[in-house]
Image 1 (cartoon, rainbow, N blue to C red):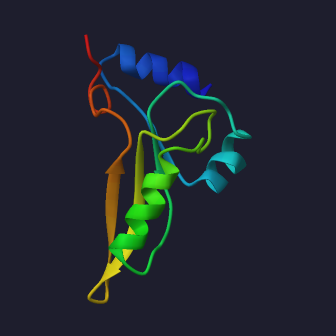
Image 2 (image 1 turned 90 degrees about the horizontal axis):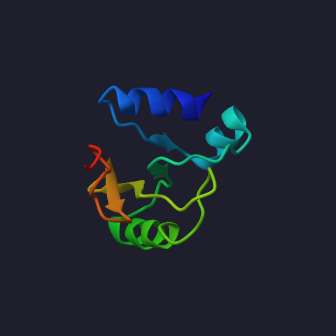
Amino acid sequence: MLTELAIDLTAAGYPVGIYAPPVHWFEITGNANVGMPLWLAIGPYPDVESGVVAAKAACNENAFGGKAPDMVQFVATVDGVALDRNIICTSPVGLVAPTR
């Protein structure tokens, strides 16, 4: 069902991807394989440096859905404030809009 919905939305001009931590993906889909961009959520981390190291490592692993992530998001605390950070693992071409 997810794949069919993604195909229909993309055909209508609305490119889609998946954003989730693996535990939620497994719970919801039973680890369904997908052919769309994956945005993996990991963390939190006590500082940006350790989050970047973990995110870059996650770029090279199968996250869920049978593929490695295209982007990895982590939370790092700086000066007492927790902020989301993102690492792009692949070329950004096609992540936001389909290419022709």
